[in-house]
Length: 454
Ligand SMILES: [Zn+2]
Image 1: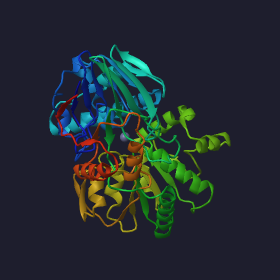
Image 2 (image 1 turned 30 degrees about the horizontal axis):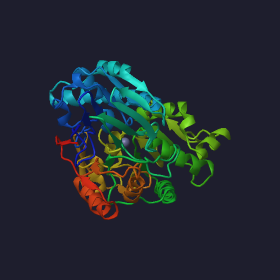
Image 3 (image 1 turned 45 degrees about the vertical axis):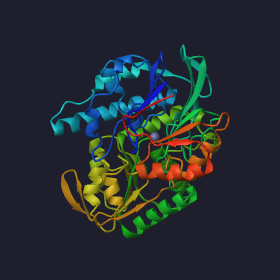
Image 4 (image 1 turned 90 degrees about the vertical axis):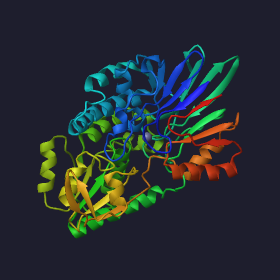
């Protein structure tokens, strides 16, 4: 069996792992590379394998860094099935349709052809094959798979894969992205009982998250200060999970009168649509959220919140006198309506940018987070006078201790090799160094394009 790495090696984006047995070739995820731009130029490169030869894809979840090159795979000849949960199918279709528009506009500005179109998204969405959690299915003569809840976003999964070759069977576990338990809204991540080979993400390796209570405290304080200072509180959000978690928190703060009244806006058509999909999958929610729904509460709506779908509605927000709170996409401030609000408010010392998501190296969000005194937004140089702060309680990723604890529970069999992926190089090595002391196995930090044989 051969395993080769085609993304998310010593970096966080572009997840794509190719597994080849004598009879079958399949990918785990086919994500987009992201960095300075929403769409990194590397996405335009050819795949190092033949798309038409891939038998199927295992898709862990709907984040664009895991699914964003699927339409390109279709365009290049892939016609197999894409196995995932029903929620992942719906959310992925939404995310890919949205990213096709961004790709078209970024490609135009760079004078190149987009690497896929909305038509490719339409056709690739016909290849999804939904499957439930915890059920083993045979997907090829030599391959069985099972999905388990990874507690990261709605519908997210890690894959258990059994591959037979030469009379021997090897079990592999692909973590996808692992959730930050206890999760809000969705259920906490499952454990994998055993594996010969493990592929583990390491986004937050070397870091520990603050508690959820601490996160709510910081949001509450930011809102109270925003009202007191008469400023604009801007919260850049991702359309999946992050925004639903923040709405859940705001719902609690408003309905239990823990904050003064202030107009709030969810200014992201994508987040509004993703929230509607969340509502179709209430059966995947955890006990606490289910109880709130049964009591008649709408988790994602409360007095004072306005959903601004159209561009026209969005523009009226800046005409409104502060204080106000704006939740806008995108989460790393690359593209999305947050850019418009940053351009308008970054030079106002009464305003505040509250970062609640991971900020990839090179992104505008990362620049703000690391204290740049001026930044370029939408081709204009804007001085940063607004306060910028970061809350890391709302990460949808497991922190260092949680990653280690999940890995330690894989015992029957114990992994012989653990590939550390989906993390910046520094995080990869921090994880390897610490985990090697606690778990006796071979830790490998693969490089892009590298192949391993077993
Ligand atoms: Zn993810």
